[in-house]
Structure formats: structure tokens, C-alpha cells
Length: 412
Image 1 (cartoon, rainbow, N blue to C red):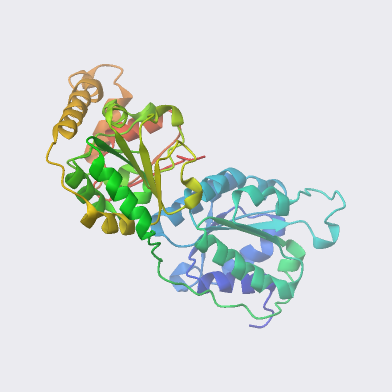
Image 2: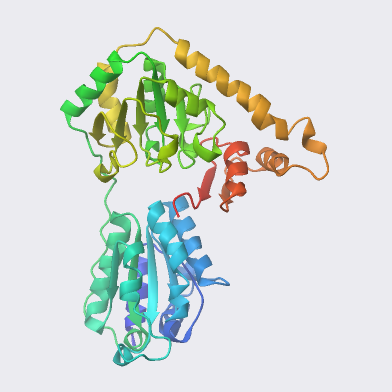
């Protein structure tokens, strides 16, 4: 391309990686990138659409939602100084949610860095805590490899990567060759057989077992239901686990903590073995002082919320598939039935009390509005909720079905 710039090269790398949208606000130092996006002709012509937002924070949250819904790399951008600083809340949320997001943070002219220039910040330091990769591009020949590394880190973490690009560098003629981004399928982390056998022995020896599941059971739904049936265990879940395990689940007893109703809490505290599966539930005051085993794909999470008797490092699905043949079926279903009945009573008397028969009171209860929204929303609706009471209403009155998605800032 005649007149091809570093910005053009960056945008071409994004197109090759499958990116079709960039969320952001146009600003002076970002102009070379925005103009390069314009020259692609938009997504309808095989290029990229620029999605204008009113605030860069919204751009980062939008990219995070895009990444979480599609599973693909999403991109946001902010101009130098205040522009890219506004991204930080959304990037924290994206990184903690495991959303593969690339942030393009434009910067002041490269020759002015370190001189207290107008709008000078140090994004190479500021974004470190909310990213898996943050790097400043200081030369045209460096740009394609940094952009490649940023995309690779965002997808691998998954999480946030930040490419910092001074406006004058973005406008330079392109140099160097852009490495092609290589994609692979999702790997499976298989647990150590000795850990699985130790867990099986503990489960077989226990009389009353409770399960608490989180977002990490995504992809392990059938295995988890089979486990609950075999060992007669009620299943509680975190807010992030709700969309993956609550629906059509005959063992569901809801949530614990501030969003829960009581049955999950009672079941966990009444068990002689608690199984934490794919969850990093942070509110340790709601976790019981009982024998506890934890299964997680991230070994750093094992035992950081409560004292463990057993730990298994592995994917939930792979671990449960290895565990199932070693289990003895529990014939005593009393603990399970008691906890399920407790859940049914609370759903009717506590949760249902705000919808019927008081649903028509004026002013109406917000719970009633949430229940109506659940009735009329599409089967594949995507729900988002702000923090505070909005989370309570969505957690209690919006029901997943395997196709609906629920996005909230559950970790940030």
C-alpha cells in the first residue's frame, strides 16, 4: 500500500486476527489509527467499524462484553493522557473477568516523553495491574511485534493487553514484518490420578455432601449433574456460575452470600464434605468450617478462600469424568431432599413474596419489574446489571436457560 503507516499496519493485523470493531473516542494522538480504520471501509467491506462511545470507560466495558459474548478478541482505544486513563475501570473489569481485550493507548509525542509535557502520563506503568501485557512502542520496526505479542497475551491469559502507541510513531511509514497470529483450540488440563483417587475416597466416605459451583463449571454441566445425582448432593452456585448450572437442574439450591436465599448456605454448613468446583467465591464469611475439597483449573486459587482437606488441579469436566467411575452411589437421599425442600419453601415464601400477590401494589416492587422482564425477554437475551441491588434482582428473578447470557461486574 502506498503511504502505508504504522497505524495502517496495526489495523491490518487486527483485521487478520478477526477483529471487526474498535470501541473508543477520537482524539488527536489517536488520529492516525482512526484514519487507518476509516480506510478499511468498515466491517461490511472486510475492514473494521469504529464504534463511537460517549466515554472511554464505556469503550472498555463494551469491549469486555463483546469479548465475553463472542469469545473473540475485542478492542478499545483511547487518546493520550485523560483519554486512555478513562479506560482503566473497564479494563480492570475485563481482566478480572478473563475477557480477551486489546487496548490501544495512544501517547504523547515520543520525543516529549519524560519532560512533563501536556497530558503526559505513564501508561506503561498505569495499566500493569489490570493487564497481562503492557508495552510501549518506541519505533516503527518494533510496532508489529508488540501488537502481535499484545494480541497473543490477551487471548492466552485470557485478559487485557495494552499496546501504547505515541501519535508520531503511529504516523511513521511502516517497517518490519507483522507476524501472523496463530490460534489453537482450547487445551484440557487433566488432573493427577492420585489427587482424583484421594477425592473419590473422601466422597465415598462422606454421608452428606454439598456442591458449590462457579463460572469454572462452564462446559462441565453434564458431568456436574451426574456427580450430584451419584452422591446425592445439592448444588449451590455463585453469581457467575448461575448461567451455566442453575437451569433445568433438579439439584439446584440457589446462591449463598448476600444474593442467596438460605438453602445453599444451610446445605453447605450442614454437609460433612463440601466440594468447591470452579469457583473463587471471595466471601469467606459465608463458607462453612467443614471438610472441604476444591477443584480448579488455576492452582493459585486452591485454598485461598478457606482451609482445604483436598485439592485437585484440573479442568472441572476432565476431573469429574475421571472421578465418576470411582464413586459409590449414595442410597440415602435424605440430606438432598431436605435441602431441596428448604429451597422450594424459600423460593415461594421469600423470593415469590415480592412478585405475587403484591405485584400490583403502587409503587410496584422492583422485584416485580424484574420478574416481568424475565417473562418477556428473548430466549437468547443478554442481561447486564449494575452493582448493588440491581445484582440482587437479576440474581433472583432472571432465569437462565442455556442460551441467555448474564454479564455483571462480579469481580471488580
